[in-house]
Amino acid sequence: YHSPWWNNYKYLNDYFGRLSYVLSEGVQKNDIVIIEPNSTLWSYYSHSGGNPQYPQLMEIGKNFQSFVTKLEKSQVEFDLASENIIKDNGKVQNDKFSIGKAHYTTVIIPPLTENLSKPTVELLKLFVASGGKLICFSLPNRVDGEENDELTNLLNQNTVQHVTDLNPEIINSLLSGQGCKITHAGGDLYHYRKSYSDGEMLFIVNSSLNEVSTGKVSLKGASLIELDALEGNMYTYPSEKEEKGLLSFEFKLEPSGSLLLFSSKKTNQNYPLRESGQQTNQVKAETETKVSRLKDNVFIVDFCDLVINNKSESNLHVSKATDIVFKTNGFENGNPWNSSVQYKKNTVERDTFSGGGFEVTYRFKVTGNLDKDIKLVVERPNLFSVSVNGKKASAIPGEWWLDKSFGVYSVGEFLKTGENSVELSIPTMSIFAEIEPVYLLGDFTVVPEKVGWSIDATEKELILGSWKEQDQPFYSWDVKYSKTYSIDDTTRKHALKLGKWNGTVCEVYVNNKKAGIIGFDPYSLDVSPWLEKGKNQIDVCVIGSLRNLLGPHYNNPGQGLAGPFNWWYINAPIPPEAYKMIDYGLFEDFELVY
Image (cartoon, rainbow, N blue to C red; front, side):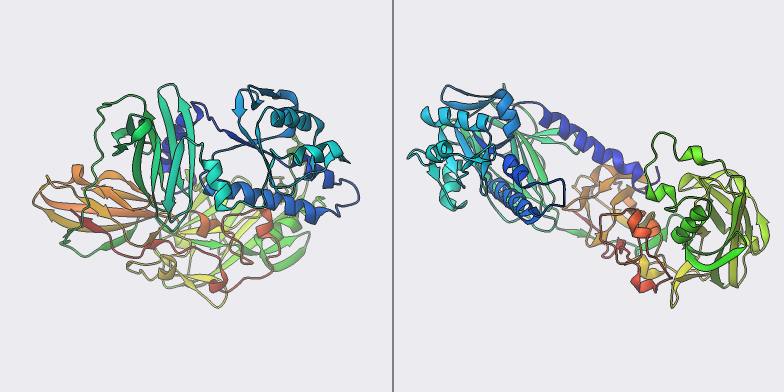
């Protein structure tokens, strides 16, 4: 519930729910199996005395990953086999290499394999003797770690195929017996196919984040159905019949796009065709785009002064201040919530302090006269006494912000132009008394200083572009972009199209009714059902994330990964341009087209 996009999360979860259900049904019938080089890797691994063979381990692992990824990108269908599972479930049956209920005509030994287990070798001998196809990209010469001439002789038989790399010829030979043929251009394409009693399911994914993928598919079936996992609808998908009971069809997938299809053995499924008309005519707006922030702006203060045991330190980041507090109170590694994992209750059971309290002061600058509605947010208000510029403040009963443990204080009357301070004190230490940032909420702007930021009471009219560059650097919620249109013909199909934007998701409203969301290429939404004859107000709400508010901001952190380590070694405030932030906002105006 913390996240600004939470109310739209159901849309994505429904998609994955439908997709997971469909793809967990049916049976994947692959004809090729690749034996994983696990025993080779274990041959190089050493638990004691470090691991001098680490480079070889990494080379084998990376090479194997590259090998199977190239096969996937070439649309070759295969399974991976663990030698331990082969030992317990493997056999040769009807000239096929069988593992459980799976049966293979082709077995592949991947590159850099040096060792095989004895049960695997025994089955490979039977498989090759029965005419099975064994393809070797390497020639292992060890069985259970020992050199073995019997294995060498087996792999040197004339019927065993030796290949040095995944060249086009060998890839085409692997594809030749496959019941699904895919050709494509552009993007980063993968597929997954499963068999049902009445047909086959095919899931195609373009994993590229910035390139379209187009292509053609041929597979068995009498009719083709598209399953729209986003909306839960089903459509007849255009296809052509070929010889030998095959269907062929073309596709176009936007970046990160996917297509879920069912090739049925039955004809005449009577599902509608998806409307595919391209709207290219732009409707002229009657008003300029109005931009408005829908929630209070926010200012974060994460440096403080600390007094504990009659010792004071100034200008500490809150993470460092917290470590000092816990170390002073007997925790050798500092804040236990960042430096350890609680086993049962072994951390909370240390909440037996009789003293060890502390005082914290946060300092910030205000320019201009703020209105009286400004609010302060402090974590765990039940633990701390709070004052603003020396005047005691009380948490508003029942009110919280961001998290239910974050208390809200009305402090507008206590603030002043110039330097301000927020003081927190706790007489007796608590295991929950972490020193965290405090936040100020209200109608103000957050302006960059030489280091850090300050609050400016001047109101600023928002326009298209980055919120961060418009003095809303920590704002994480929705910003509304509104225009009015006059519609004469409501029988036409109208779509709202986005240009350049950045956010987690966009909500679209027509005449104050939610028409849907936009989150994926091609960034358009059919709004026809919500349009009325005459004037129509269309609102696009771009929603951000908590990334710019909660960080990590310091020491140039990488995108997509955050942990306690991101709050280590923060020794001083930094210039605003050094903060790691994302530019959220609508950068190009939206269009209404028909």
